[in-house]
Structures are given as C-alpha cells and as structure tokens.
Image 1: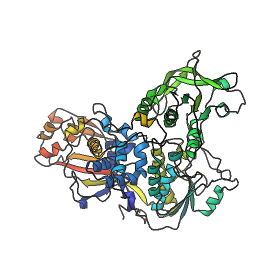
Image 2: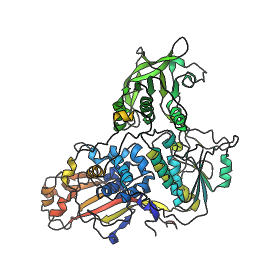
Image 3: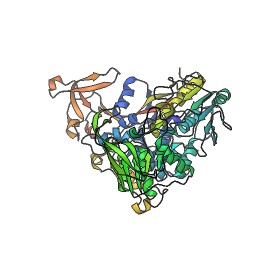
Amino acid sequence: MNHAAGRFQASGGTPAEAPAAGNESDDSNIRFSTDPRDYKWVADNVPCQEACPAKTNIPAYIRMIAEQRYDDSYEVNELANVLPGVLGRICSRPCEDACRHAWPGNGEPVDICHLKRAAADLRAPGADPTPQPFPATGKRVAVIGAGPAGIAAAHDLAIFGHEVTVIEREEKPGGMLFYGIPEFRLPRDELAAEIGRALGPGVTLQCGTAIGTGDGETPLAALLADYDAVLIATGTMRAMRLPLPDHETEGESEDIIRVLPDNEYGLDFLVELHRGADKIVGKRVAVIGGGFTAMDCARIARRMGATDVVNHIRTTEEFIPVTREEIAQAKEEGVKIRGMRSPVGIVTDDNGRMTGLRFKRNRLGEWRAGGRRQAIPIEGSEFVEDCDTVLVCIGQETEHDFRPDVEIGLDRWSNAEIDDNGMTSREGLFACGDYVLGATTVIDAIGHARRIATGLDKWLMGKERRRPVVRIKPHDRSDRERAFDFIPRVEMPMLSMDSRLEELAPEAELGFEAAEAAEEAKRCYLCYLNYEINVDDCIYCRMCIDVAPKHCIKLIEGVEVTDAGGYGELIETEDWSKVRAIWIDNAECIRCGACADVCPTNCISISRKELIWETDSEGFA
C-alpha cells in the first residue's frame, strides 16, 4: 500500500523530513491509524487543524518556519490548501478563532494566516513542489469555473491521473480571487503564480469560454456527452437584492439600486473594476453590509478619493463576519462603521439624483445560527444620512443561467443538492464549493472542492483511492520553552498610510521578515505532540507534577468515554486512595517537555499525531 503517494500525503503530514530540532526519532517506528480514538484525539487536541476546512497541518508548518525550513513549510500548506501565498493574505482564519493560544488566560491567537504567507515569501525562488500523480486513468473531467473551488478540484483530479479541462468564462482565472478581491489585499502576480503551480501537468485551462445555449457558448449537455464527468464550480456570482420597504409595491420587479444613478451592487462594482472598467464614486459613499466585500468596497472608495465612507450594518461591529485586522485597517484608512440600522429608502432631489439614504434604527434580538444576533427594527425611528454613492454588499447567490439545457435538484436556498460523492441529480454531473454551500469563504470552498474531488474520483474508478488516517510518529524531545507563552503577537508591518491611499494596487500588508516569522512561530503550542504517561511504569513520585508550569498533570480516578469512542472529561481527585492514574491533560499542556526530563522511570512518552491523507492508486480493500 502506498501510504504517502505523491503530494496528497501532506494534507496533514510533512514532506521529506530531514532531522530537525525537536524531532530526532527513527522513521521506521511510524504507524498509521484508523482507530476512531485517534481521529478523536486529533480533532480535540489540534483545534486549529480541526477548524480548517482544508485540514491543513498547522503545527507542522509553523514548526518548520521556526526551523527556517520554508520550502517544506510551503509544501505542507500547498498539499492541503493548494494556494498558500493567496490564503496567507486573504483567508478568513477559522483556525485562529480555534487556536489554544486564544483561550482564556493564554493571550492572543498565533498569527497562523500570516505565517502561511511567510512560508510563501521566504522560500527559495523556484522551489516549487513536484507533483507525483497517479498513473493516467484515461478518464476526462471538465471543471466549470476557475475560481478557488475549481482550481482546487482540478489540482486534485489531475493528481488522481485524470485529464482535466478547466473552463472559465472570464479572460483571467481566479474567479472572485481575481475579480472580487482588491489588489491591495492580493497582488495579481502572486495570484497568477500560485494558480500556475496549482493547474500544472494534466490540466488544460480554457479562459473566455462561456457555458450556455447562446451564440458562441458551449452547452452543458454537450460537455456531459464529451467528458466522463463534469464538475460545476461556478460559485455565487449574483449579488443579493436589497429590499427597500419605501420603494416596494406589490408586483413591482424593478430594482431601484440598478436603476437609479450612483447606486450599485458591490459585487458588480468590484467585478467590473477588475475587468478594467472605469469606475468612479462620489465624495460621500454609503456601503451597505459588513462582510469582506463591503469592507473591500469601502477601502477601495477611500483610494478612489471618497472623503466620507461609512459602512452601515444591521447589528454591531462585534457580529460582522470579517477578521479584526480587516476592521482595524479599514478604520485606520478612514472608514467609519455605524451599526444598529437598516436602510428603508433612497432620498432624491427634484432632478432625480440621490442625496441620501433613509434608515430605521434596530435593536438586538435573539441569537441566530452562526453566532450572530437578530436585528429588530424600531418603529418611528427613521432618519436620513446624506451620501452621493451607495454600494450594496449584503450577500451573493448562485447563478443558474449557464445550464438551461440541464436540470438538477436544488435546495431551498437555490444551491445544488449533491450526494455523498458530490454528484447532483444528473448522472455524471458533480458540484462543489459555493455552488453547493452558498456564499462562504475561499478556504471553505477549497476544502469542500478537495473532498468532492475525492468523491468524483471514487465514482469514476469504482473504488476509494484516498482516505484520512492518523500518522503517529515517536518524538524524542521537545525544545519549546515556557517563556514562549509570553511572547506578544507579532504585528504585521504595514505600508505607510500616505502610500496606501495613493492608488489601488500597492499591497497594504508588507509581510514578515525571517526574524519576525520565527518569533511568531515560537508561540505555537505544537498541539500535535501527544504526551502520555505509561501507568504501568509510573511510581507516583509526583516529580512531573512539581515541575509542570501549568495545571496540566492531574491525579485522576477515572475518565469518561464518549459515544464517538474518544476520551471525555477527566474525573480528578486529590485523594491518593482514589488515584487510578496520573494523567497529562493535553488541552493544558504547553509541550515544554519538563515532565519527561525529570521522570526517573522514563514512563512519559511523546508522539506526534497528524491527520494526513493516505493514498493508493490500486484502491483500498
């Protein structure tokens, strides 16, 4: 069995490990587990990886940065999330929300996102990972859409040995990465380079090719006839309409945002801007919404000369779904955020030109799914704020106009319904990313696309050829110090404000230097290291407890076992007559190794547990 066939191995594992500080064990002792308890251990004890939709092995790549192994660090990332240099700039960072360093009393989360970028920035020029694909299968797959989901799926399908054609209607690949995200957040040369690496051997890219039944378009039914499988990865490219009660009448279909001058949907604004259209905004810009698109529009408006830019949101800043860095940078650039309001109408002058927005104030209601609050309008609270331009950014929806010749099942949100392998109700037609999930994030789309690529391959080949396993390797020592816990989070160097607002292109975040990256990397708790006490060899001397810098080694009389087969809560005791074992609580452990150093019986073992993708071109039994 090929446990580490090609690049897939490091969806959680590590590439070609040379001896490095903190890891001097014999590779012959590595084992691979499908025991539910080991899956549960990784899920519980490596919260950053568990939170990452692509299941990136975060402790591994951060440790490599501390060891100045930038090429290896980049490869661990590239094998999991496909576009490390891109995601190191624009990822929504669910891993940082889960980071143990952000738990109460531990400080701020490790800057996982920017360390990903550091691996990309600091690696040797031209040190690109070399694909090791499966043998050619003779199967042909068409992927519709060259956004992040399409790129990730095509990348994996080519590694599986299939012949892949990516069809993109725009002139450039990247989808929302190119047409939705401003250059000051994502330089186009970095984007182009990473797309080129991802769409390597086995992938043909066709840009400027529209799918549909119109003149010059390629019908979806024709693709289904020509290819062994077709994968839809078109995302959510239609702006969600803004309801304005003052302008709604029964049976009215006209959208005043699209009709009235100086009003525009933010998604359309960004796409047209990045297609090369000349766009202008007034001096007073009102942006409706608080997501990434809204923040991008507000920051672009400042760079285009607007002097008064306001993001109007329904609840409060605490609940808008963007990173705290994005909010801070927008405010530094002069963007105002005003909450607890909903737009209800547009105010115009006698010539029909817009002069302002009419709002109604809100109060916070019950909690909604996803951790946000309801916004309850307050009757009689209307007020007007002056503005010259309105950019509406309240969400995106799936577009289905490219497939009038092929019907598929849709859910109640008009997203594609798929089975466990990712296939729609039409045989041979698969879907992934936002076309299935609705508007999500880049990392969500990539993670989902990679799972669907595995399912599509299983359907094509009639067997499973990739599956997650837990890689367990003995780890002899640890050189993490208690002092690393108190290193403050390293701040991202920024372009000066004057230079930042001069034009649209200069990148606002400058990236870490090597010393800054190493300092931030030291903060990681290395949660993939598992410290265990062999109770048969333990003499209950308490020396480990005495040297432990935190309450991480506990006297216990029992441990709960969960329905999933993992371990639950520890049942602690201070009564020696009830002690059944001395237990290392890995949720509290900081991986300093002090306990193992003082143990007189060497009963404390250290292993590294990592979720990886095991692959076999012949399929698993």
